[in-house]
Length: 145
Image (cartoon, rainbow, N blue to C red; front, side):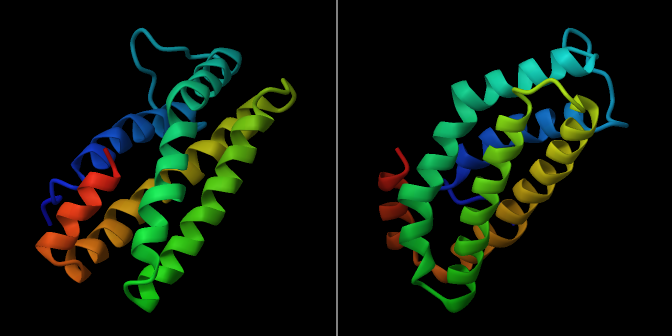
C-alpha cells in the first residue's frame, strides 16, 4: 500500500534506519565509505542515534502514538509495543558506548532495528491508513511537522 502523505516523512527516515540495521548485523553487507569494523560501526550507530534517531523516537512517542492509540484496540496494542521497543532499542544503542562484545551488540541491534521498522511500516502505518479518514490523516500530518 502506498504511504499517505502524513506518514511519508517518517517512512523515508525509516530507510536510513534500515540501512543502519543492515550495516550493524553480523553478516550484513559492507558499504563503501562506511565503517566495516565493530568499533567504527558502533561509533556510527551511536552518532546516528544521538543526532537523529532519538528525536525520531520522541516524535513517534509524543505525537504519533498517543494520537493513534485510541482509534482501535489493535492500534492501541501496536502503540504500546512500539513504545516498549523504543525503550529496548535505546538501551541497545546505549550498550554500544561500552566496548565489550561489540559485534554481538551490533548484531542484536541490527536485528531488532529491522524488525521494529518493519512492524511500523507493515502494521502500524498500514492500520493508521485504514482506520483514519482523510481529514484525520491531514490532522495527523500537522502533528508530525
